Length: 283
Image 1: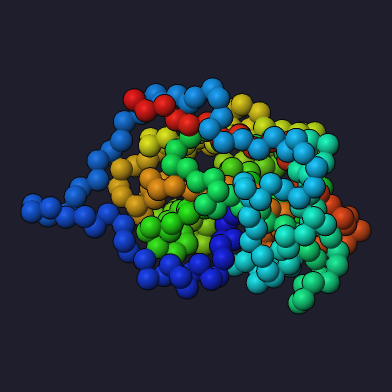
Image 2 (image 1 turned 180 degrees about the vertical axis):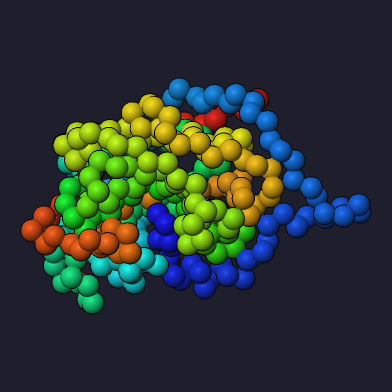
């Protein structure tokens, strides 16, 4: 979600930078080809699903956590934990809860859940039904990052934001994609925004259809966002490698905290009814 990558990952993967489309043959570099929309469809039974039909900590076979209070590249204010105080399941719903409490050098706690190496996919349909927190300073996100960082550090290997929302701008939901050629710090990011009623009082369906031709984002099954593969290589389209899902609730930060944080809102929660992933049918 924007620059919300682990600083440690930057150190680990910076040596991978520039690995993009450098395969060569005896005739020279491979020339990227413009893809064709083959009208891919998706299976109707999920290949991976989390229905949250249990009670307690999130299923460890499906979810891990990013931990710490580094600011996450955006000057965020929370400390991410793996405590059930911040991420727990009950009554068929996952609750990611931000709290006003001191943890190490931070004054808020929350959770950032990831499916890294437990759920990683290349292409597919991704459906997440969620109810968003209300209040100034909240910055929930449903998004995807590359698992292997094959093209280098952020944003070279890409990012897909299925849903972002900032509490000071209630109801305006953002869907975005970031690549080396298209990302927010150079004001070229691919983004669409839709006004959604009752985002904090009702569940809405956030969906991504990812094929070799395009990223398409939907809210309640209405197409909101489309980013077509231009066939110009990884700097524009790094979305030919596996990605994983992240669910998190940030507090403050460059975007989420642009109008401050209302401490009266805590604790505040993003609720997730389910996460479902459907395999793309090969043509």
